[in-house]
Amino acid sequence: MAKTRETETGNDPPRRRGSVADRVYEALKEDIFEFRLIPGDKFSEGEVATRLSASRTPVREALYRLQREGYVEVLFRSGWQVQPLDSRKVDELYDLRITLERAAVHKLCRQTTAPAVLRQLNAVWRPDHPSERAFGSTVRALDEHFHCDLVAAAGNQEMTRIHQEITERLRVIRRLDFTRSDRVDATYEEHAEILDALANNNPAEAAARLTAHIRASQAAVREITMEKIREAAALQRQKKPD
Amino acid sequence: MAKTRETETGNDPPRRRGSVADRVYEALKEDIFEFRLIPGDKFSEGEVATRLSASRTPVREALYRLQREGYVEVLFRSGWQVQPLDSRKVDELYDLRITLERAAVHKLCRQTTAPAVLRQLNAVWRPDHPSERAFGSTVRALDEHFHCDLVAAAGNQEMTRIHQEITERLRVIRRLDFTRSDRVDATYEEHAEILDALANNNPAEAAARLTAHIRASQAAVREITMEKIREAAALQRQKKPD
DNA sequence: CGAAAGGCTCTTGTATACAAGGGAGCCACG
DNA sequence: CGTGGCTCCCTTGTATACAAGAGCCTTTCG
Image (cartoon, rainbow over the protein chains, first blue to last red):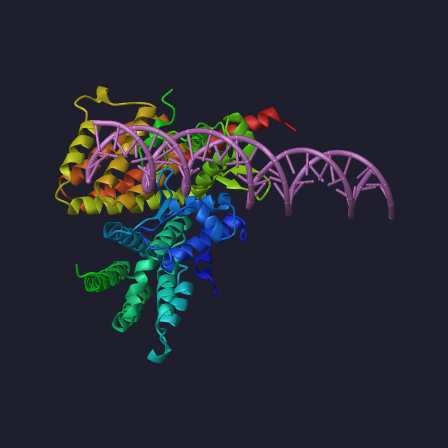
């Protein structure tokens, strides 16, 4: 249901929507996002082509796009592999995110025509009653929009495009952040603080709050990941006690 | 001679070097860089395939890569077109460059293991005698390396990769900067100042100098471009006085 | 019994064949 | 003469056929 309509936020779809290659691209990306394809999994072009009722040509095109975006890798004449997202790369992407969003915030404060976006974001992140707060995966989507909208509002399309790519790349990880209700609450509060600083045209504080917010999320995600790894390891030990 | 070995600096060559697709990719990119393919030019896949003695399959792969990087665009069932690099996008890419390089400089100052790169850069940009200064296209390559090395030294591979992409995208334009000897001299001096600030572990000044340096280059390039456009327009008027 | 070598299968890389559609030029008609 | 529509060619998008190599399994020899 609703497929991966989320990824249609339209950064660079110069290719005609509805082509087989696009369909395959979206399907594979969703497979990766939904863990139907796990990092390390190997598969072949023909296999994917059969499963998605397409020929190898559009499948290859989709795979090359995904490769460029860092999701998969081709092993010379030995099939494809889902690229694992190691913690080093994750940290690098977070750093990059912070760099870009800080720059966006500074740009935003130098602009005069900002309030439109800010008003809209305020409406979402400052509901009249706490009961109006979203929950679950909705918060993840809203959080993504918050950060993407800030960057987009700065007006640099190239920056927006790259930030969008990073956002998608980190999506698999970031969703973990919103599985804890305390983190959801923190997100609401921190976003509100950032919006305050922006409303006061205080770029330094806005940037500081933004950085702290992202770092907190990053730390929480890292912690949750470690937890999950420990759980998985325990389960593994329980299963194979050799 | 020497082909486009420059682009082999190896950001992401997961594809086997020597493949037809890579050869076509490099050839097309060089065609664009050397203005054998001018922005606005239209061409077809079959045409390129014939010219480069390949089939359409690797040509298409190369074209999709170039499309993703913003060099060309596909017109639905109506051929391909070399994407013009409008001034708005150029400005955006410059802004992005500044953002990334400033971040790199800040990171660099927080590190302890920086001097190696700095020493090497100093050797290049602070020759014992001004006579040892490079000239022509060599300066362009050296300037590119200066900025790329700074970013690479910060240690964020993702940032390095994206910065590299931006660098390539702006190369066509930036080369204009080094056609004026005063700009070459300025580059030497400004690079030296940046290296000084880095040696003194003064991130704020380094970032400021860096920004000023890039902005100066941007302004010069813009001016030279305007000049060239005026010249071209004059020539046009002379040719077709209707 | 072990190890090495050879072949067999499956993989990607490339070439070509086929399908669908857009654009320009031409012809006919008002 | 102008304009609208039609047709043909050329374009990309997709499917399939062919080539070359990497890996594994089997077989054979020491």
